[in-house]
Image (cartoon, rainbow, N blue to C red; front, top):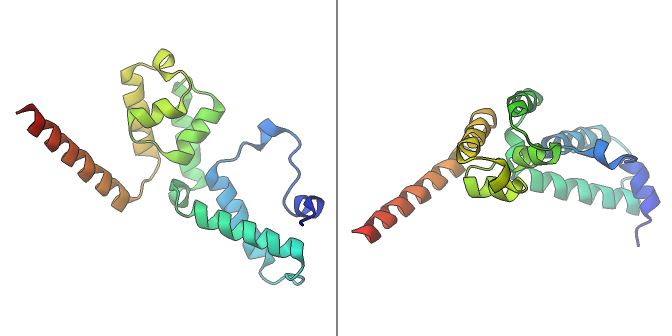
Length: 160
């Protein structure tokens, strides 16, 4: 098996759980930089190093398919500044940043007790802020819009 102590020393020591709230973008950047630093290093063949390489590879592969691949430090700052007006927890803001929700339902899943805490207008404002501040995948958004239009057409047909 893997000796955790070796792996832990390779990654980083997290002492305070709250201080360790990182966005997907920050993790993506950290691993990308780490991967660059390690390119020329030796002893890649030790079990600990192979395991770390696998973890880094799989995590980067996953994160490259999420909204964070289109984000930058400037975008994060702009988003968090825009979010100051909204009464949300750090964890909720982080989830909004990581998932980039585009519907009221998605926001209700992320924001705890959103029915009590947010009005419909506030949810719309949140979606607007997210859409403006956080870049989305154009192809993905087009597909979502087309699905929405299709659903609207089907709903109209049922009414007739």
